[in-house]
Image 1: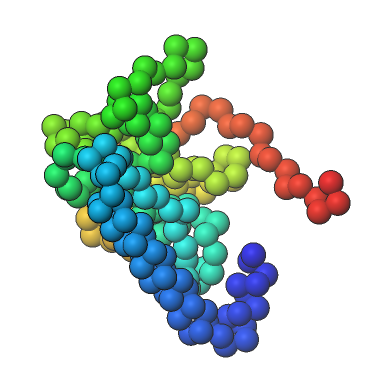
Image 2 (image 1 turned 180 degrees about the vertical axis):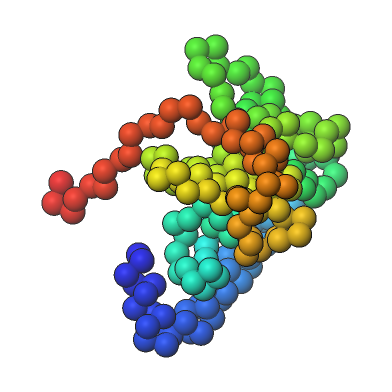
Length: 212
């Protein structure tokens, strides 16, 4: 919780906090290795698709932020891997979304797409098999009603419910320190990403009270 993070920092315990965070990461990495080793030595490795995905990222002091409630690269990026038997591993540099997982699995497993629903995700099978290098459209991230981030291979554009904007060029500013939303040179790219903003927002979900 935000209050807990602030208390840790105010108490001067941020170094211990980071040490614990990295230790937890190392522990999970070790357990993942054990699971994969067991799969590879078992009878099902040749017909098992392995997916590894994490929760959204975390600001651990960057931008004076100690939480994961933001729309920047650090807090939107996730660990995401899809291992398919018989397909050589490759790194995909195009931004993709976890929402792409369902349509991708349908194709990889030979299952039909739903007839009654429209899928917002993109089938990543061509990227996995190396026949395409781009997702085909930018990735949308949302935090709260009216707050959105659009990311393509080079740029990130943020627009907040109050109209504030941020725009970052990852070719020159990978850590998003310089907001260029008002830079006329970025106007064409900003307008292109703005086309992908949602036309309507779902109402914000009220958090449940402990006694409900």
